[in-house]
Image (cartoon, rainbow, N blue to C red; front, top):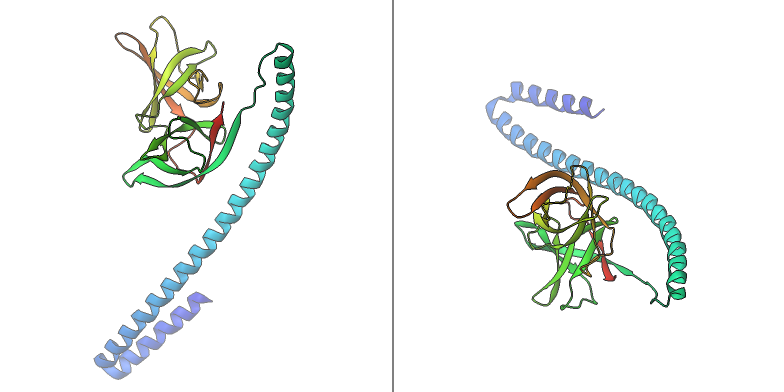
Length: 248
């Protein structure tokens, strides 16, 4: 239907052009271009609105599924935590009660640096370093800049924390390398392998132990230690929300 109207419109333009000559063609052509331009602008605007609407609908569906999965996980973890704390009480050990909080990212700190974002976190303590989670994986750390909470995402050279590599729990320290993550200071006599999972150690007080960071893709032997290159689970795309670790 739209194609038929457009052809009809062009036909009228041709008839008028032939009948009334160059001056009429010029006036009509100018008006026709304006009409077509307006039509295309409206068409593009409508298409974008429809696309955004369906994208939002799909995102809502995905978030609902994720929320149900998280609710199930929370129930299982709550039961596990209860059993764990019962054991701790029997051994006169303080109850373990970790705490995380949902926080929002506001904006990039610098427009040309995608690894630093401001975090909206009212209870921020500028003397602390916080672990940051994205869908259960390590996303980086939160530090202070000018007294405000700033996230250093995985990939930032100053996003540094303690990790274990592989099932043997080989110790190392994460340091960002833009799209890659490097784990440095691995002792030479230890043998990390490609495919090993890297997880947080929990020994630095920033993260819980066992939070996924990524998978080893390369092992580099250096003069005094080994370094592994890691493909992180949390990618550079900056989500609107994270979880910040308030208590380990």
